[in-house]
Image (cartoon, rainbow over all chains, first blue to last red; front, top):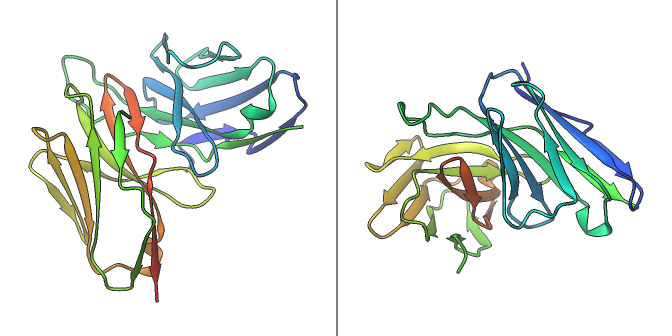
Length: 118
Length: 108
């Protein structure tokens, strides 16, 4: 019954060692998002895909990259994790009907991947 | 100025109390608005969308004032299970902006 799935749920990596987090969805939503959430802070949008169109937030470090090979999957690559990148990473999806339709863009979140950097 | 600002909280209320959260946003072109609930170490979950006419879902009432760029959430007859962080979310062209959240604790 899961709709937005994230793997792994917990990831431990070493300082500077690349890591990939994955997200998949069964909702067939055209928009997928990646957020970073640190303790007691709001989720911070890193980037999102509208179909295959990548939209990067201006303040997202180059260290963070993303891939969306198809509608269902989206990956977050952290090229050289630093201690400050330890956080919960949340994937979310929504359905945008485009300019010809109206959508409230409700987001559905996955359970998150908690990243620890040693 | 932050794009989305919420009451800092925390709110500590007894069971049965009525509590109200406020949220303001800076981008007048924002298109849609939501309240999410987030439990400790869990993902945010949609509580309700916020419509211009105001909307109610059981004990929860949300209001939107576009002229003042203001959103509110009212919780009546608070339950222990309402204890969580409440996040205000504002969207424009799939660019979702979260408020910092307001922590609510309902006590017996």
